[in-house]
Length: 109
Image (tube, helix red, strand yellow):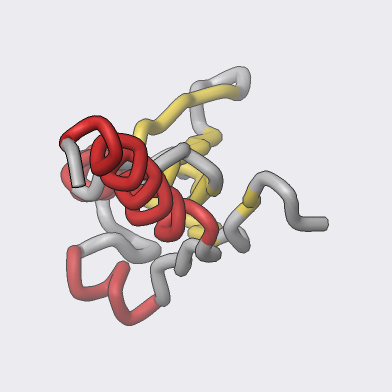
């Protein structure tokens, strides 16, 4: 066979190979995994924010006293899922109300 015939087959194979992982549902971090990286209620918020940043999360802060943290990360070849972790920084700058949300994925209810 000629190279012209193999190129479309190769391109189709690569598209399928890269596309399939994007179709899977992302797995959220468990409490044990968060604990293992040092993110838990009672730690300083900047430590939690830094540890989550090392895992690819970007944190956005809202609230009158900038106390509400919403950390998100996209996952998948075609960023199909958003993983989200939220927490509140109390008046002593400690993490409280740490919550790991279920993944929000494109194409799922």
